[in-house]
Image (cartoon, rainbow, N blue to C red; front, side):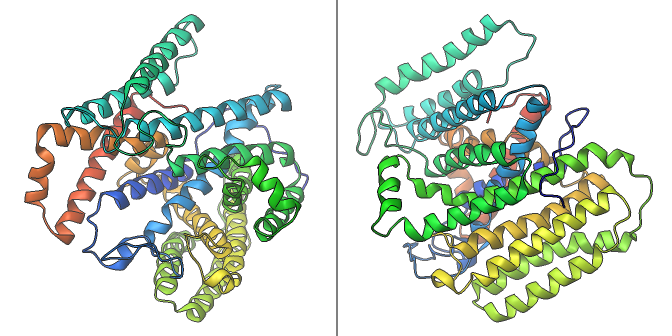
Length: 478
């Protein structure tokens, strides 16, 4: 690929179903991981560094589980979506300065969301009577619609301001009156959702990096070198540590949050490939590959993911390295001699996916083995590689085979991820508590695996609710 090749303008915006599906899978499994019972399930059902039964954080414990995949998969999708969000506007004449303004505005919105969510979470609120905290949680969920919903373009601007003003104004009044169980006892910027804060930093820095390197792939890859240098130097005495401490705000954000760009920037590279393919895929008239090749590629993404989870959790590192080399080789054999745009696109994804995966495995012995917390270089690149291979699987299943059954919920939730993220804590759980259905479900589905089924059913309920909003064209701006 020519590293200075510009993105091809697309005649009309098209969604990429595979990207939506992976994002939906990530957000729903993230919700599921918080809905399953604690203490009584096997270790592979929890974050690897927070094992049962006591769930005490052990930073010396290497390995990953399926729970450790959901956040990097979401970050990868965030990176891949950046070209989709900005390229169309740039084609229409948006200047770089205007694009920076849009990026910072988006960052401010995500930052506000990161502060807002824990301030309305019922488990944080101190109310009398106690059940009132659940009512406030539901109100907080409802207020997010006027605050964040994408309003129709044909609606007069004055109504945009009125609707936004009502949402933000009501939220501000409530936040000024709330009391909390833990310090600080009133509203505070120090009370934030760390996941959303990491997404904020990743979205802003990742978007800026893509904006100024969008026509130069080598330069974007070069940024990873500087990022690695910062990772090595930021805790050692010197100007790098001084700068890091100066720009970081204690208890709010830290410059090391930007290290997740090791996932986001490869995601932007994949996003560029996706945009180019969407612009030309309808021109494909012939296929040089057999149906069996496509089927094997779908299976390969799943096998690679499961194989790495098993091997790295069990610490069969050498066997996992051999397994990954073999699987990457198989993927290159299956994608050889592409005959059309789609096959060339899948070939690109396989090459880059193999590169990031094997790079991650090369880093595996470094930093004490692969870990989500504290995050390691191996963690960044292994999860990026796995995300790319799953994108291949979803692309074939959704965009080529047009599989709908079993995937429509993933796609719908991937198009509305922020509703899915807060829907359990601010809507479903408060309703279950207020109606008394929560304890009933716990009695009907007690214990380890029945409790897991309960969590799965609640996650499925959330997925249906989010899908309903998506079908109604109700989206939150993110």
